[in-house]
Image 1 (tube, helix red, strand yellow):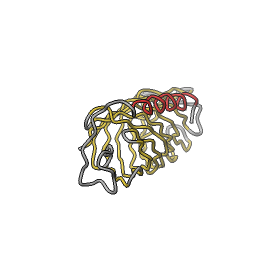
Image 2: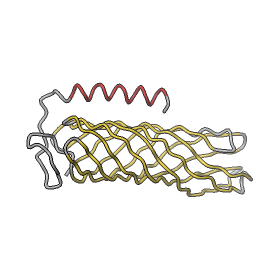
Image 3: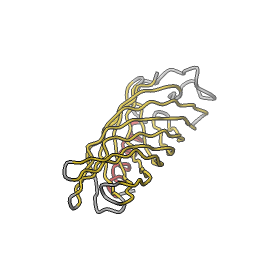
Image 4: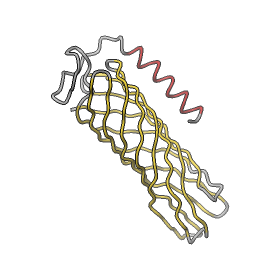
Length: 206
């Protein structure tokens, strides 16, 4: 994890732990909740949300280091047993990450993930790890010609999420994504993309 990502994660973790003591309204218990005290904050059930962040990475067999803003939508489902929260989450992101190397331009127009999540809840504060499948596009341009390939790979990361008001939560998350290499006739090489992203998000829990 980069120093920037670690610092951002540490700052949010400190702030959300302090928010735990605040007099925030609790979400009511949902039928999805398992083995949870009546007065505890509920993380269980489905949710939808959005994210906005920044991506930076590198293209294999090239000196290109695409970077830029990334944002998109998220959907997931949590189960909860006591303080343990686990679930599934998927997201789709559009990005402006690109870079030029020699006469080539490399860009990552979009990517998505399908991941598992597991974490520990301190009432309305959730600290979690996540990992699973990633997929996305790496595009190259040369003299007005374009070639794009879709690759699959993996995504791993950590995050912190906090209940801020009734059914709304806010989060910060770091993901590392590795997309497999493909052969590009424009570059005459196998090119793949690895990148990290730090993103802020909001979720609405049903």
